[in-house]
Amino acid sequence: MAARGVPTTTELIEAVREFLRDEVMPATEGRVQFHTRVAANVLGIVEREVALGPEAARAHAERLSKLGVADDAELAAEICEGRLDDRIGEVVDAMRASTFERLCIANPRYLQAADAARVPADSPAATVR
Image 1: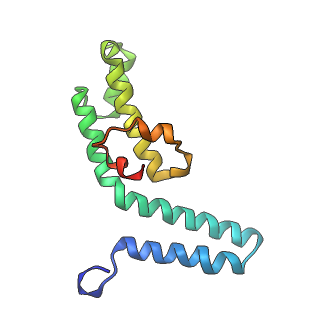
Image 2 (image 1 turned 180 degrees about the horizontal axis):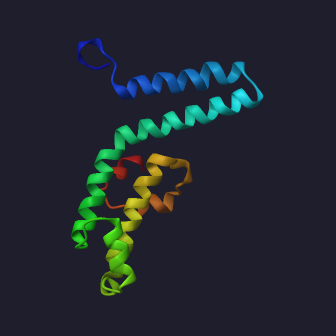
């Protein structure tokens, strides 16, 4: 628990997610149980976004900067124009790391061990391995 006895945002989200999963889901069925599962899963995404999102966004912006572009739209334009053809390995590595980070937030169950092995050690998602 955070200082002053006030729970953190992450702790609050976790408490509600666990309540839905552990108390509400077993006590319901059908449509209500399904929507409870969906709500619990959404809260899991929010938890991971709070924990990993800011650092993942910073890392993605840094990767884009190293490629010489300001944002994803500019990256797409540079790729379409063929201006990064000679650096395609760098582009693939950068996008692989960013995609891994996004999956770590959205649904880490979609990842395979081989995916994690390709993520740079300095990626915020490296701790998810």
